[in-house]
Length: 208
Image (cartoon, rainbow, N blue to C red; front, side):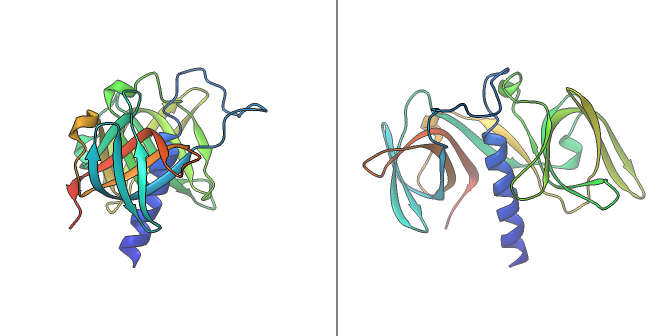
């Protein structure tokens, strides 16, 4: 149960990261009359065809529409030694009573996303703090590990406990998406019940 809850927290953080894959300078708030908020689905890919994939979710099978505008990212397990100065990362953290931050999960962004990720710190709906920023130092010590992150308007130091999951996000072509992959889809809901995907995140491992 604890492992499932931990994975759920990581997925929520990933959804928050995907929400920030927008052009630099885009307004944070949605203006009056803007398009509806994006919809997210999660499940196992049942089948793939040109322009369409079928996703098996907890609510049944769902149709996902894809196009050349659909971005696809694969997430792969990474190690603490993979985090290097200069990397752009997103860190989901818990804030302590003293204001200190402790990482819950870390995602290393692909180089293709440089300039498309808003480097800032904000509070998610879960209450966790999300920090998207560039790594300046990585310190390993007896008392733990600390990331120092810089972003526009501030600097954050975040303790990284040994159990915090670390994942690398890799941009892949839509043609690399296969049945049995676990996927999270973000996009616009259509009147026929389908979803037009703007972003898809898949795990490297296949579901069984």
